[in-house]
Length: 329
Image 1 (spheres, rainbow, N blue to C red):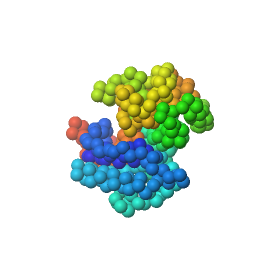
Image 2: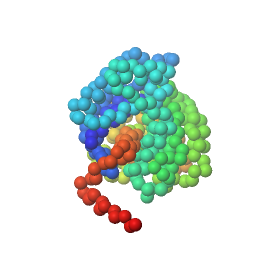
Image 3: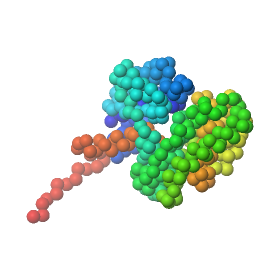
Image 4: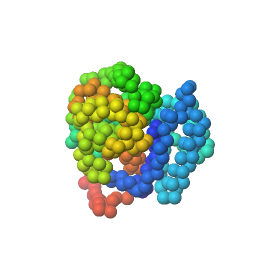
């Protein structure tokens, strides 16, 4: 079946269509996205402006039409921290539903962290052992740890790269003082969250999801996306520290010359690097592994699991129907 996932994030709005069935990995069919930083449309009172709401509803209509044109059978539509933390979030959701008929499901920070962890577990499998997953979004930073498919602890803090850039790094390039103050703020915000993971044991694998981690790993020498999803990509804390220092001295336009950095991400790259650096330091890990699956894939896989219980499914073509069991009495 063809599934659509409409992801209203803080940096981009993205529709992904995949072909999948229970027991199979989802295969991307088509994608439609637009850079739309809802964080940049926040008013002083924390509400999303009318202009931002208009841009959002226009894209949701585009996405709905795109999904229908490509014969999607199911559409999962969700939103994360940008709308979740806006003071007029419920009104924005109501307007989108009224003007597009699409209901956006608002994920909590814990749900976002849990579903991302779920995707990472499915990608790496049981053999990975205990996993710690880190995900830097535009508006928030998610962390989750566990040994099973769903995490034992899943939490979110308002340390998204776009949010921090807007609030702390107004100059281009930023001043040494603003970078120092942001470092201090990130650590003071992260420390209480990291303490929630005390006593859970040590992770065998630290995974990094999100475009920010992929960009940082690419800058530090990881393989490009063209090499495919199965290439092992890692980000070492030492390299991260070196590049965070270099990026802090660069203008946004100069960062565009770095490998893997898009125009939409160039401004917020430093904030993302500082969050990643602090997280590895506070969790006391020297490196992390980039995982190609994240929140969208987690929601898709969860939906496919639900289909198993919605009713009987035809067996996959390569699996024969089981023989009838004769009673033994």
